[in-house]
Amino acid sequence: MLVARCGLTVGGLSGPRESLMSRDAAIDYVQEIVEVARGENPEVICLAHGGPFATPEDTEFLYAKTDVQGFLGESSIERLPIEHGVAQAARDYKAQPLRPSAIR
Image 1: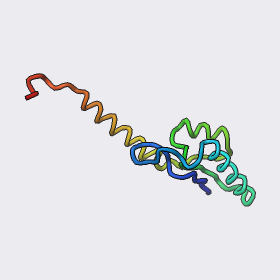
Image 2: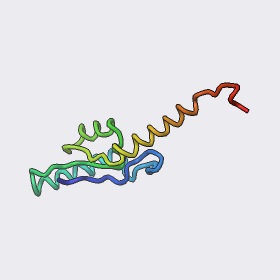
Image 3: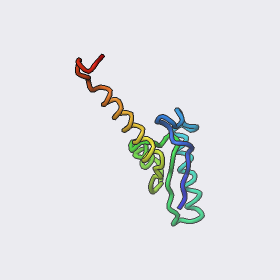
Image 4: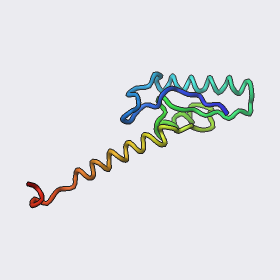
């Protein structure tokens, strides 16, 4: 198995704001790695990870434009959804009004 790593996953509270590579450059990079790897071993399983690929929509684009066989999620599966979920829960709690008699 080989993972074409495109850098740190963009987004969320603790991730970088922008990728070191554009999505198009990352596509070219991933496909080049896949082609070289399969030239050495046609049976190698090739995945991609990180950089501009952070959402299911990003992986849809990745799969349409490259020959990877999957995606290594890491931050996309654990950090980003947790950050979003916790932030949304905090907003939901803050949005609940207090009874006027509770405010002093």
